Length: 592
Image (tube, rainbow, N blue to C red; front, side, top):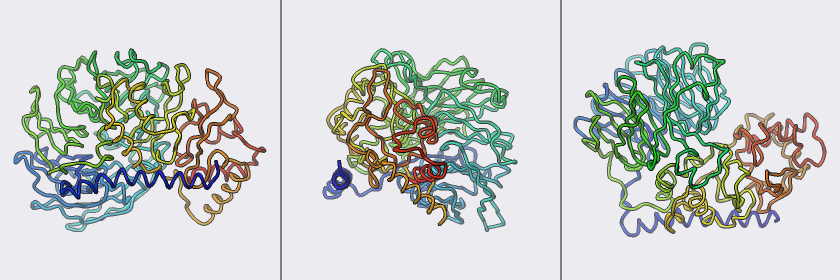
């Protein structure tokens, strides 16, 4: 393959993606069926003890104030582009919302049935989490792709509100969820994709514990004050098991769980939290529980958890027994206490609703609409809903999202039929930037994306997909942009270092397999001096875009860092690198 062919291929895929995505929207508009903007609530915060709820909208950048008693939205305002989280002060007068698209934190006054933007400030790129502490005078913000935790002061002087960044802490992984402990001295930061967990000292602004759990897709964090323990909703993939029908059916391959960690365990830095802590399964024979999304302690050691992949709320006794599974709206994403006893509020992402549930009732007592939705969706929008739907798999044990978190990856090995047999598990690759990474599978045998999609559903998820499902999933995957650089250029000197690394990349012939500058991959399989458990030596090179976000490398994760790729394996080098050349090359790779 040459560079001209690579450019032509990328242009063709871009045009195809545009046809799928824009074509659906155009058709609906011509038919007069798309007068409304899409809504996609992604986070929620209680106001006045649950009497009201403030909803952050991912699709339209809105904040919506919902009065639970009136069963209605009472105030709404567009405050950003792509909101990702929201927090509200104890007195209910001020909200802070993170905008993932503009990399800002927005302060919004809540008063007299109005939502007014009063301040905003730049924070670390791609903020996805916000929490208040210290009497609402301080805040922490998690920047996902930038791998930062920002500490901010919230200065309130009458009507004047200022947000001031105090410090920024580099993190060893991309964060997503945040939880401030009741002592307001410590916070929990969870991994956005894999299973790492941090305990951060808020006063010293430093990491005091880093733990690795047997986990991925950590979406729910909650503190059970009555039991003095941490509850974590997540998934567990058994990478040692082949993805056979039996292993999926019996729930031993993909477990959907709530992990319980006591305070003593959390702060015992010598304890392995994966082996010493209690894990409670949300699934049971014949009834999977793909993608738990939120968890909330109830009374006497019981708790509730939303199951995003099958649209249910699970109620779990202190014994660990799931006593109820209550149907709710499409992809429940947030779980809050209502103002009345035994009342829970479930925010549903894809149906744009709030379900009001009074435990132990087996169905919502009320459903509140956040606003009318479009009468029809584009193929990419339909595909997104299918991507997160656990019912695409056998008995609802997993969704596409289960292994490809938010379209990315948990980075774990999976023993699929990608090579045509079992026994040689391979690293799960990101789906971000999919439209530029054909062919698919580590052996490069899948030439068409729709064939890869169908095979994944049928042989990995052991489900069934219609032609429409496959088409829509393909449209959604084509809409996913590649991951951003792990380390963008900082200044002129850094840019010069990156340019030197680019020259090393070219001199060493890296571009033969990872063709710059559009895709950083190619359509062939190569012998790179490695082999899998079955002696196979030909591998399709993954794209290098966003490679700096990786935790391990090669088909079997044998390299634990980018440094190891060259230090331990001398990966395809024409000649050994000097220290300066390797430093520049690594800097270049992390800028992609």
